[in-house]
Image (cartoon, rainbow, N blue to C red; front, side, top):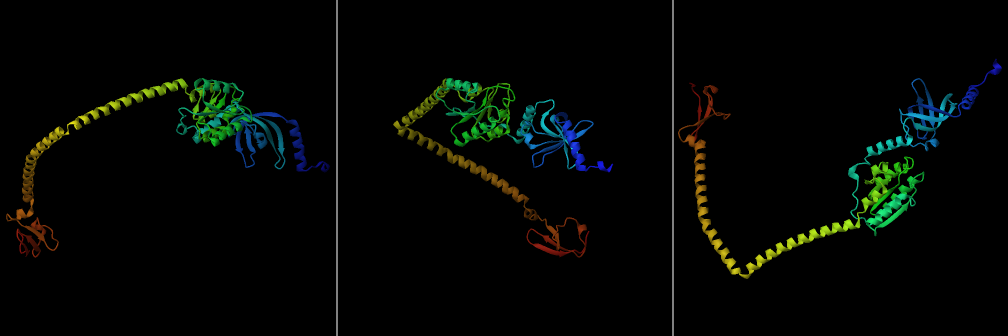
Length: 396
């Protein structure tokens, strides 16, 4: 029997070969729990159902294919192989692909990023900028060969034939699209050669429009100092760029109509403003002319006006003296009445009629009740003229 003894390492290796040979490619469904992502960037978690669980790992190299963020508690469908981690003798799933169960990975990624950026305030209406009334230069970030650029150019040319347009060509789908859009936005902001930017493309599937759902594009739009119009897809299509941009256009053609008012309508507005300005100027001129006529009338015969004002001064002067005398008499009578009332309330006036004020010594408390003192106490009595100090002999 001893000839068949093997080491732990040998046994683990045999189990590893057996498991990995039996399960080289499996699809497993379960719920993510105990998710851990250390500094290495690898994702470690437990995949479980109601009865069982198994450890799983998604290495960093495989995560670049994920469109959503792994989260605790979500149901997923995974593809991978069974492996054995020999240092601990544990079997685990080594995953290569994960998708959410019941909802597409792209849709889940869209909802996750939308909630994240909304919480950070990137969608707040207060930070959105107003579009210029009549931009002199328009920047367009889109594919140079798509239908979107042709529609926008046709609309802009019809509404304002002499508008200056700068096109920054970018791919609008695929892995290279998002970095190119970010670079285009940074270029326009760095150079500052346009007044407004339109970024977008024609319609397509969620996968086709995904470049405009990338976080890097959303943050580049948010960081732009130039107003940005997002015109992605059809009227029913919504992207993260639509929520971050200063204005969302349902289609690229609508974006061109929003940013450029037709030259004919603009001329009509100018004409209306000009008419209102002329009307106001005529009214102001007529008022000034009327005032000038009045001044000229006075200047033609200043002596007559002087005589009128002199007579008016004499009239007011004659009325001034009686008015002052009347007010003086009235105020003097009021003063005498107040003086009489004040004199009536004066304590010395009461003392003059034979009354006195007695205080105890040395406290100086006014004495109102004979029971408050005793024989031998000193008292001070205030008379109308003078003060008397006495000692109590008897209290009745």
